[in-house]
Length: 210
Image 1 (cartoon, rainbow, N blue to C red):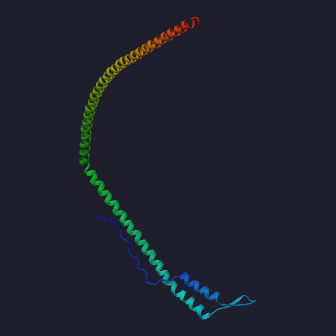
Image 2 (tube, helix red, strand yellow):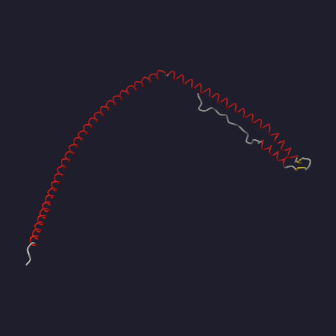
Image 3 (cartoon, rainbow, N blue to C red):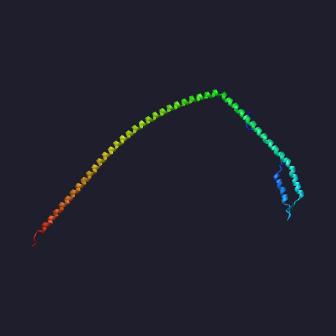
């Protein structure tokens, strides 16, 4: 059976691991803290501390090597476990492939049903499209007819407005004409009256004085 995840071995490092670089730095500090002797380029160091630190490093090296070897071994175990997991994945994929090939008849049946369903769906879509186009054409004809009726009504209404406007204009002009005729009559009477008075004045001026 295929495992969900490859097994990973647990590391079993010791609780305390010697930091070899830190111990070497301490050894260097012992040397640098020595007393410089002028002119001869020599340094006096604490021999006991130096040897003690050197022995500590010498004793710690085997355990460090063992730890490195153990880590390397655990790394190889992880690689081996991953390879086994990969082989399980390959085997599971092969089994799945065999199942797919065995179910090939079912796949073909599903494909046939899919093709049939697609054909029926296309036929339904075509029928709906034809009905929709017919409905659109009918709506277009109704719309055109309604627009034509509206246009004819608008023309008739415009003609009524035009006829009414002509009649109104004729009445206005007629009233103006009557007003002008009345004004002309008043002007004529005024002129005649002015002429009569002028003649009377001229006749009175011709009488001789005594």
